[in-house]
Length: 412
Image (cartoon, rainbow, N blue to C red):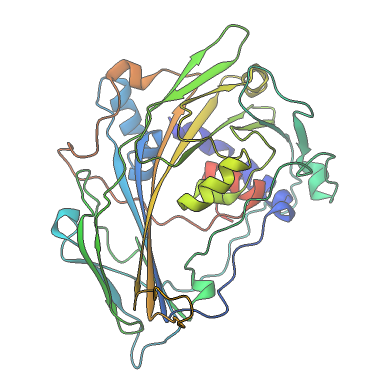
């Protein structure tokens, strides 16, 4: 079902070019820090997010429509950055996992080759269409909505009044990237096609070893989050009520909806109470950052399990409106040597490691309710077959350009 959006990718690519000037800058490397930084981003995907992430495609969608059981899936994104280079030879590193992960003894952290960027614009063609931006939970939009972005005008440098004039900026958390590391390795990658089993567990000892960083070792006591199941219900007057199951580990929630018409118009709505869109809300977010975003009314608190999409959003989107829901989870941090209890003692660790969690679901808001047809998505631990590990995602830009690219499968 998610593939129904693919024919619009060329048009969206043009829009991204026009919106490039709206992209927020990425994070920069810390002035001083450890030799090595390591991150594990662990996700649970359900609904159409599981189909898209696992490569199930239209066959998986049709299987669900014909009575198949919606299956939650797992995703892992591993990144190693170091200030060192190998003493000799090519960079090499591996993550040795606990047996419960079901990925064998280890997975390789591959240093990607630098490839020239792709020109996403189609030469000689001017961007067409509009983007209508809505935000906030409620049956009717708030004041100043929608903000209308005319892509042809954006391409000429004409920014519409009201765009990004309200709401708080969303800061990007520190990240391990090839651009802020002397040597970098990641998984998943093109070297291995290992799959993360649906019943995989992260509990236990983890070790990362390579020829360009010190050995990293820690014991993980937090497993994947349960699946989150989004539902939609039409309300009188044309509004749509979104609801979802509460997750005990959730620190906050964020929902959005996207629709497109054949005439070139696209509609974007987010549950944020302020006009604040940006790449970080699509990512894994630390509990401390989630708390700040809740205070800024960008992220919904963990006590809230419903939100109303204004009727105007559905009316503007037409027949297709796709919803997405994120539940942000806990975080685990490790370092060697550990931070001294006395703040007066200088601390310069050899390595630091961070593990973040989230649960993500996607579904058609005005399409068939697959969860109601076949029951809620089951826990990820009762699969008969291992699920394919999603391919590494391209880096997403900040701002509207990055959000559109992420939703439509177009990289920055």
